[in-house]
Image (cartoon, rainbow, N blue to C red; front, side, top):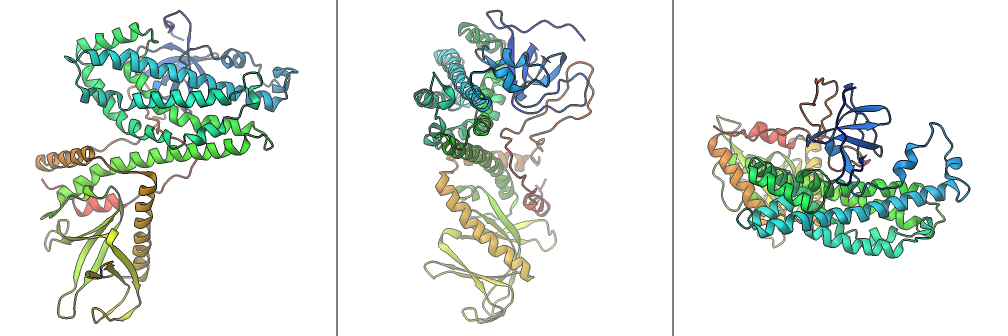
Length: 511
């Protein structure tokens, strides 16, 4: 095993990190571990791959898979390191408390300890970095600072309030009797501020990467860290912590529920808090997915010929369904084959080019907020006075606009009827959750799409979020970093959607 210089805090203590996710590896130079393992950080000179030790094993591991312990003095580290293999927890915990109550005490103490550490961490960022950056108007604009730090100051203010609530419910003398579940329930909507931070985090990394190519910024950020007496981690490492923190809560609450007796006064609140925090994480994931979708929608629109009226993004942010339907006209008119794209709030339809079937021309849209959808029986349709099969009618609430659409097969019609229901559910869900796009996000997506369209360059394909490099060999430092999915919770995986594949096939970006 190669010798390495130990990684110490400023006060000379050894630095420990806690694994947030399993790291699966087949490489003998990488350190495998499971979520919750405590790792001694030996070498952190590289910002992406660190060298660490667990018992007698050493190796490289991805820095983004762990959470640094800020004060490094959490009591369970020394305790668990001395547990003999196969030893009974009842014997180890001693005669004081029954095993389950002692384990609940440990989890409660862990939650309180990590929350206090996190507050210190946020304070260090706000006072050690942001405060100093604002003094240097010659180096940073307010827009740059907003990009780098996002809404972390709002998060800091919220967590100070949240910690006060936890401290009130924390029973110092008998921690296992603490009733902290209600604190999470009381603030479950407040945790949604993490959505903005997590969505902005990739932009922050890009901005920091640009600045760190300039020496004066490297020296400035290092001076900020030293002045605040922070541990030896780069700025982007500190800014990753809130992303890691929000997905830590469901794991902690799951452990707390595991060691809480159903008769405990806190049981129902902890159970509800666990579900609430899972929902928060799901919401953040959904918002992230929707924000990624707006670029795809903008690129799709830029490829449509003869576009008229407002941008799709002015009202919509998600594609619900798409397919080919026949738009039925009055008897004296010709029926029209059209490609329909159902977004939240609107249904856009286009015509295929006669020669180039992969080119689409914009022909119109229907605003779904003002439409009611009706299932039409096969046979004579009275309003249009035509015979129809597999038809659906869209009529405006005012009654002055009626559209009759026919599918080729009954199952296609049923799929469209479900899609129209899904669209209404999506709109209502967005209203309930307060989801909306900012004008800046919409504008930036359209600007990016226009640039790519004019240059004839398709958008770069991004790598999957969670990409373990199984079997990849490296002589020293791994060449690529596996990216953790930001919020890995135990929930069914979505089936991969074919919508965007179909759109890409129908409307490739023209050179």
